[in-house]
Length: 331
Length: 284
Image (cartoon, rainbow over all chains, first blue to last red; front, side, top):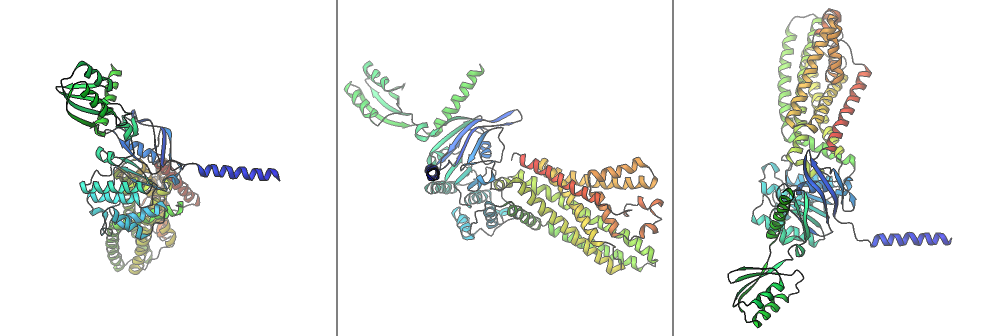
């Protein structure tokens, strides 16, 4: 009897423990590898998208971004590695029940109407989405009033908007957007940005592959940079862009003042203008302390400008470093 | 989503595609033209003063000839529909968003196949039935086993489109249609050559027909259908199997055996299985 009570308590404790665990990440993969004949498309890629997190996938053409996305969705079979969606193995179709996907190559049945395409995807997802909700989805992407029109007559931009509605129709918990604004005008791009931010507010995770770095910088919590099929860098925007600089216009610079500048960080000089790297752990005191000390050392300070490195500069830096180390390795 | 629901959903979309892409309309126009033309031909035939035996022989041969026309239309139609709907969707990217849904690829393929089978078989059965009725109205000829004949025509269409589905999972949409129709015609010619070999008593030539009928059962099923369409006395009228009737391409000497029908069913299952294996492993 006592054992039974203990056993029951044990199971309850285990159940509580499991219930208390954080939910599985929206997407997780490790060691993904894909070769097409002799060409390696993806090599040892591991990444994770947390619940409600927006992760940007960046990299030059042919870096393997779309292949990684397709492997995550079970559309391409990896040669090695493992991937999970919302806590389920990708090989299990049920893993995609709450996943929305806008492919880079977006095409929908031209002989169906926009409403019929959404209804079809609603049925295939098994989510049982009511017609009113499908209609709301079309309105969200700016296609209200076009629901009865055949997709064959849509412009590319409208088809991409429809693709976005298809990705959102089955109440997803994880949305994969592969180049979602490639065919959209600036207004459409702003709409996509708003939709992505709205998804985050509803705790829906998003994996965003986009060439528009500004777009990624504005909406993403984290960024993964792929180069030649490998993860070249990854981290939060603060981590990736942590390196900042100060540009100062100084005259009457004494050796002591120069030493004070170099004590702060790497210094580059161009006439009166000096650029000083600011340490990543700066708590906001570096610039005022430096200016105070320089003035005390008799330097005349004409201008002080904080310089923030853009994601684009950082991305180019990462890719150039990669290319440089590869060519050094080849030599 | 249950597999059965996925299969039915995809089958319904495939049928809708056939109707929206005007394939249905094109087939309907072709069928009406063929029905009108054959109706006129048969009525002219009825005006000739033939003995009842001659009339039955001519009606049998002509019916088989026109039915061959329908089976060819069905073969071309389904072959060129299966290619675009399967490999075309994979190439264009339509399949990407569909297969990213929580569905099994085998269920998707089964749905496509089922839709095509319903379309192709539906066409030959309806057009064939209309043709039988036209023949009855014009020359008062009713085939001995119309239901078996139409079922075998439907089976022939199913065999060919299963082959097209397999081809569509490995090669381009256009190539899959061309190869399937090419093989269909080759098997038919091999069947005729084999029948000539049989009537000449040349075993080596006769084997060409037997082997081709095993490799692709379209011609075997077609010969079974012809046998069920034609009047049993037609072969005797033509001079008997030994006197050259067997060499005539629009007469069939014997009904199909159950073993052959079982082989055709196994063939379809095997080729579909290969198509599913190829499609499941495909990188999209």
